[in-house]
Length: 93
Image 1 (tube, rainbow, N blue to C red):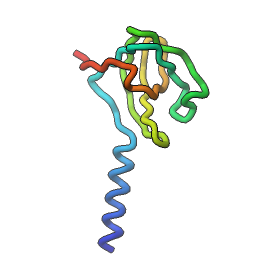
Image 2: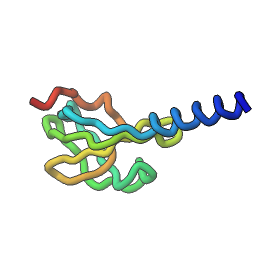
Image 3: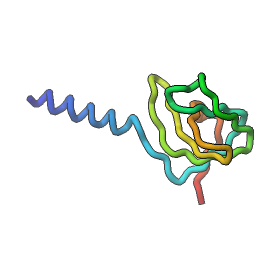
């Protein structure tokens, strides 16, 4: 019974950390970055491309397989990005 409770606690922790919200950040594209229709459609259904200097607000992040996908709201629209390293991340003030 003790092992079962430990397993349940670990599973709940993983599920909670698999989806997180982002607040207080502004992401500014450092290079051209594709934005996709959904986390599941990454690299298949590109909605638009961000250009260097375009800014977005991250809404939430989800681990999909081994990749971290982040939903963003930009001037061009809303969608999902994979490459967080393509952005300069600053605090919203």
